[in-house]
Structures are given as C-alpha cells and as structure tokens.
Amino acid sequence: MAKALLGYVGGSDPRLLAEMRRLQQRVQDLESELVRIQSENDVLNAAVAQHPGESLLNGIDIDVPQAEPALT
Image (cartoon, rainbow, N blue to C red; front, side, top):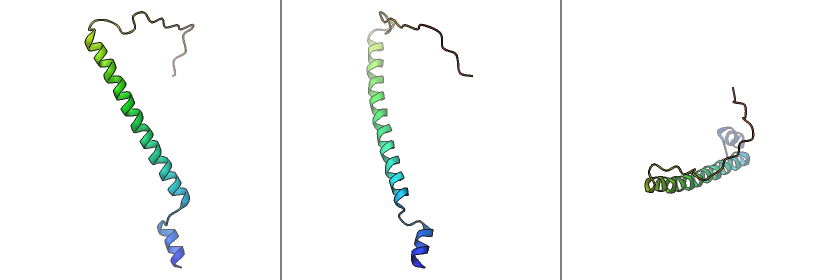
C-alpha cells in the first residue's frame, strides 16, 4: 500500500525527471542565446553611435526576386 501511495503522491517518475532535465537544458540554451544576442545588439548599437545618420545597409545588395504573400 505504501508503494501505491508513493506513486499516487508523485514519486520519482523517470519520464517526469527526463522532461524536467530536458526543460532545464532548454532554459540554459535560451539563456545562452539571449546573452549572445544582447552582445551582438551592443556591438550594433555601438556601430550606430559611431556613425550617426549613416545606414548600416549601405553597399549591401538585398535580392528579393518576388514578393511573398503576407500571412493573414
């Protein structure tokens, strides 16, 4: 009976533990991505501050062969 109660209360289910580890890893990955993007943003902001009034896209050719439909 004690085993049944322990299972009912929420003993260590291997699937639950595996999901928790997966989610913890995902959170760590997202936190790392956030730090990387913030650093990249800081570099871009510094470049804009050094060259006010200039476009960072000068000299970059963006090729768009055809318009894509908008999502509705």
